[in-house]
Image (cartoon, rainbow, N blue to C red; front, side):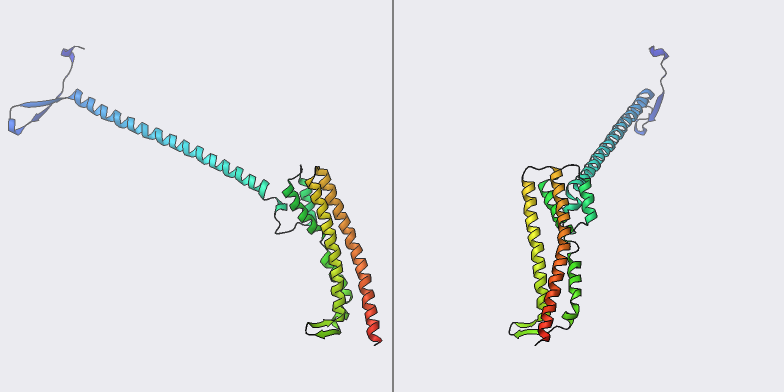
Amino acid sequence: MNKNNCSLFRFYLVNEKEKGKLHYISFKFLFLSIYMIGFYCNFLNNIYEENIVHSKKYIEIISRKLYEFENNSNYKRITLENKPYNDLSKNLTEKELFDVLNSLEECPSKEDLRNIWTHTLGVAKEGLDDILNVLKGSIQKYLDNDIIGTKNHMGTSFIYDRIWKGNIFRFSRTVAAEEVEYTNKFLGLINEKHTFDDILKFIYSFLDHFNSLKKELYKKHQEELLQKITQTSRSLENK
């Protein structure tokens, strides 16, 4: 570039101590300085904005991963831990048990099978209290007008109450014996090689057996109870 064609703008500064001397600053130098300062500020701003963008993207990625992890964890807790039959604080109804059995696509673990069996026992024993209430109702008038049988330091024993309690004991003993027998069979089954069909067949057959057993127990104990009450009543009348 030809220096003669180059325009030069001078900024004159007057120093009061040195009057008559002129000091000037090149406009190009001033412009260049301003440009460099602006460029540097813009550079820093770009870096800052770029870092902010990257940080936001990084935070979004982390948040997404945490969300996916939480969802997966919740899914595992639902499918592995919170199965209906693993909650033993509340027994399943017959319908709920059948729904669980029908929903299973493969044979559960031994621990799950033991929990299912616990619910199966609960379902099987449904209605036992009703049977006992009906049996007791059939002799309620005797219980309401009971007669003292024995009275000693051990307490007072009533005749009809003793008959009733003896009946309950035999009834409960039979139920407990059946429960223990089939539980041992079930545990033996799951501890050996088995298929899911084997498990289902055993559970359904046990429920059918127990339904028949409840009917038999009701009929048997009703006959025994009424027979014993009648004999005792006649014996007392003849005294």
